[in-house]
Length: 280
Length: 309
View 1 (cartoon, rainbow over the protein chains, first blue to last red):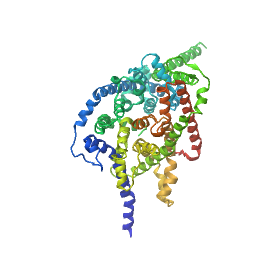
View 2: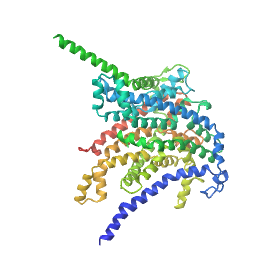
View 3: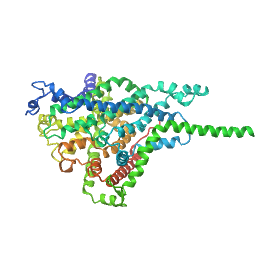
View 4: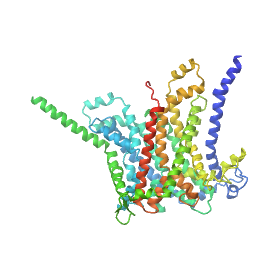
């Protein structure tokens, strides 16, 4: 009597969820599998009908050819350079602003914070045209400056993230230093920053990922192919009449693998930082 | 007397110093805000009342740009395409993410592996993901139609048939719901166990528990995701542009991929109509604001904020 019921129970709580998760997991992984398989196929295998899943001859040269079909290394270097500058900019500026918005008491602080949070609701398109006009007047279109300069200033989302973290640091830790007459900058640098490293790592990772993926910024400001990033460079592939999908998928793989690797490399610190800031 | 006077000036001086220090610390945001948000907002509003092509100086036209908008067929088309994504994309994506989160929350083995798998696609750059999906959705050689044929369905010509281009975008969107799933998992873990236990004692089934406990408990997160999703969908750009360009046009087949932000970009940077584009941007802002307000106002009826936690 009890047995069939518990069997039913296992079906509902273990087997069915597992089946659902596994099926969804499979469907989520298939595009990756297809990406890599296509990147190893010859043109003959790619355009074979009915479709062959496994390449008959594995064509590694798609990767080396992709490096030559577009100046892939140059684009990678350009992208990486912008990423590193974005990380430096955000790691310096966002925690500073967050400290001001959390651990300091001053008149107008909450109003400023409210404006900052509200500004996140503003569609990018509203400021897109005037900011472009501004850089155009300064003769900076077709250089990295518009992207670098905008990444220099604290980004509200990161400030918010850091602020939540700073609020969770016990005040006893800074009171003693304050009584001893230490300046805020000193407290920030010697007490807060060392404690906030996990959150700072998250901001660094976010800043890197977002710059690596960015499309609109380079699209607006970089016309000269010498300056292109990977996002813009890969887009050039589809302008061609006959798309070489093997090359394209090889290029897309090489575009994706570094950040997936970076993510897993930093994940431990990342997860720690995120769960401490209340985000998961 | 003298003592309290010097105390008061001392307090005042300290307060002034606190403001100065506070402003210095927050300057890394404030200066950027003034340069790249506040000043551009004012200029954007000004440009929207002018005709401006970047080369000659802006010419005052009053509300002409806004009036023109209402007679612009492509404006309506792009608005329609975008609202289509909200209705048929945003809500199904949320429902799907919630379903995945519910499964993940059932304490089955390998949970963290599954979570990683669902999260993985969100790391893929939009351009790379779009190119991959262009290939997956290829009518003849694509994986999607191959899988569909296995269950006896003849897949559509996703990227060419104007009726199927937006569903193609939405289908691709399911792949990127990992962040939403992760947020829902976090919300589910915060639902107090005691509520479920109490319901079980009252003899509630799992369906009843889902509707009466789970859904209301996570409704604040749902509200947040809907608002963020609305704002994001109205700015939907990259994937649409890549899909359209693969069809050798800016708006895709019969402008079926001409989303609002894409049309705005085209108006600004292909037609060099900066004034008109600025008017479009303000219109976008108004529409998004209005929709957000509506959602927020109705939320009193369906969002439940637990008193305890």
